[in-house]
Length: 169
Image 1 (cartoon, rainbow, N blue to C red):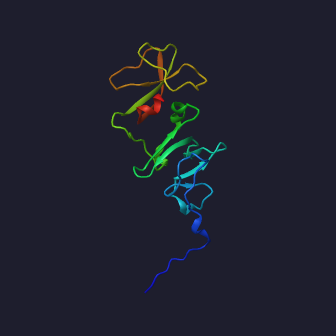
Image 2: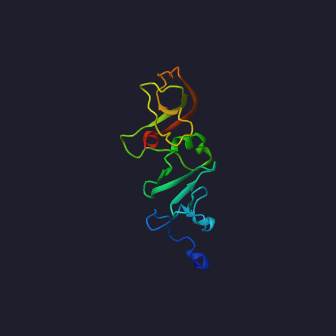
């Protein structure tokens, strides 16, 4: 018995692509939105924005830019060009996504972040990642369960287990 593979018109539908000249190489398991569904796994669809930047759209309409894709380690590096990631993470739910946070450098850690609304920023707290907030009284603070929130602040949201460098850049 001899089996032959038939190569038809669709043979080149899943060629390696990229958005713009300097974007990351895109191939299986990722696919671009204009390619047939079989070119990538479900949830691994990437797009090109108006500036030819590679973007990943999450189910909750969060859109992040793709910095690089490491196919060997199976990691995708994402960033927010608007530098407003902390506020966008408030609505991120990775349970509906095939992705999860990881730390790719041994000296970095995962941590819980809390978002506080403060009437006055305590001296030992830092305002990080909220430059884009319309309400300048919102602060992101990394803290341990042993520390109490300041009395001038009200906790409005918790973001569990994200890489520390995600918030500080």
